[in-house]
Length: 261
Image (cartoon, rainbow, N blue to C red):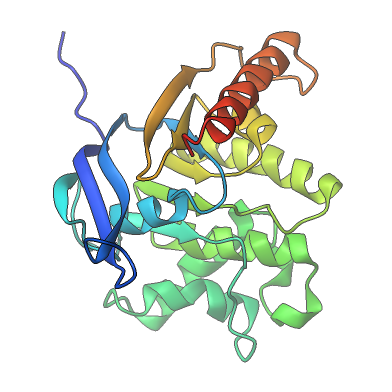
């Protein structure tokens, strides 16, 4: 049987930042991080604030170079009007002087696409997130949840193989957050994108992901990995999922109490 190549392969990744106050002049953030992500897989990365989850996404995106180790993408570089990854942050980061459509098209402007094609793809991405009727509006006319859906559409417009999401629902109220979680799962099912999802919310991670990676320590390493076996679609009150979330929380709490954070 032929084994499918990983979408992302992270090998022995280590990263340090300069720190004049440290005895050796640097702070090691990540050490010997390894992760293999299959095409179409949904991975959630959890851990305490400041442990290095967001930094890890930036390394995978190529925005921060590691000190050692490798990040191997199944497809490197932009080609044929596509980028290998899309990024979604906690703050939607929309440009207030651009319409919703123009915000979504923003990431397409460096790909050499004709204006009409950029517009078509922006409108297609907005339709995917249920905002086709908001294309001509301005960011200030949208709710917080709608702005975040625009940010997701912007990431999808470049047709990435890998969608990286950094606390995308963290600033939203509970009801909107749950609604967008379900919309994201529906979008994932329809597009088969590979997703790396950073969150502080362990219940959210267990509800959404195929696997949950616990990042802890200083420097940070993978402390545990749990595969979610609960069938989809999942119920939020599923007893097995709740029990797993409790175990992960207890594990993280023990690491923090023992100085392993």
